[in-house]
Amino acid sequence: MSDEQTMMRLIDHPDKPLTFVFEDDGETGYAYLLDSDASKIVADVWLYNRRSTPATPEWTTRDGAPYRNSAAYSNPHDDFELPIEENDIDVRWIEDENARVGSVVLLRDKPIAELYVGDRPGKSKLAREDGPLAHKFDNDRN
Image (cartoon, helix red, strand yellow):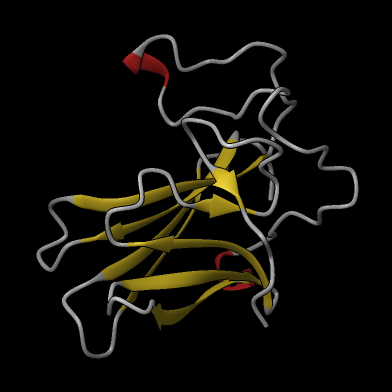
């Protein structure tokens, strides 16, 4: 994938009124959960920076969204193999102990993030510290 290209993948929940959305705009990757009519984001999480990681946060204005995560909040991406095509990303639907619906984001069948309805933000493997774009992912999912 070149920096000018974008990738997007939508996957509907088989039984619930939710849609999983993966989006890579050439600068960063995010995952979202949308409500039944796809009009409202009910969960979101930053997945990775495709371009260089900024030293200072970009989220000081609403104009630049979606934002790359800054160095203080993200782990180095050196050994993280970015998706090349939309089908590199998949989802496994889950529920927590309170029957809250969520998803595990899979990159080539490996868990890289997790988000439940209401998570703003969810958890990401590349999050170093809990921040406004992602919380740390404990990565104990199989």
